[in-house]
Length: 278
Image (cartoon, rainbow, N blue to C red):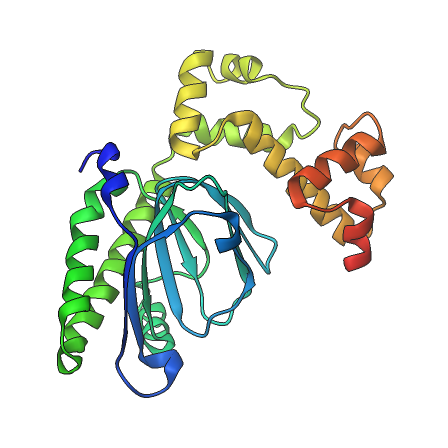
């Protein structure tokens, strides 16, 4: 399927129930469109396992651990049972995901067997278009099966979720050495003293080659990656008791005002308000 054909996919989901406890008996999947930012789920908790692959659109994920990640097509997001998480949808009308949901007991079994991981809530798939036939097959199977034949659907849903997780982990490990080293240099240079041109020179690679390869593998520009690490570090510093002024100075901002403005743009609230919330 070509990218242009994604627009033909309609919002279509199916909700089934195997029996037993609600958190264990749920079985659901489908293509879900979220046209406005009001479809975001902030500080959301579900008692079962769910994952989705973003096919179109963009947004952001964060959770109770402080983990934060921009979402672009190809991201696989795991919504773990009983964990507070947020999925923010950019309200441009383009969001399209395929999701799979099944019970907590099934998730716990797959986790114990090492088939799923809870360490990384957001993974990345290199060629997510290749999975579209599997998504469509599962949806058709699950939506048409009688209640007495839902067990094979559950097994197929588990198998597909495990396949996506395994392939995404492999994709994440496939980040090239040059990009991996560039990430390390950017993380160590939170004061923004090194330009990408200087980093490319240190790594003996062309600037344009590094820039394009970085975006292809990290799904964001190098400067955005550094800014994300910068803000995450700022958040940790504030949590550990550092003042706004000292955090701003440590991260290379000209003054506390410039730091506060950037912090508010990234997290949605000023550092002083964030400190009060702690």
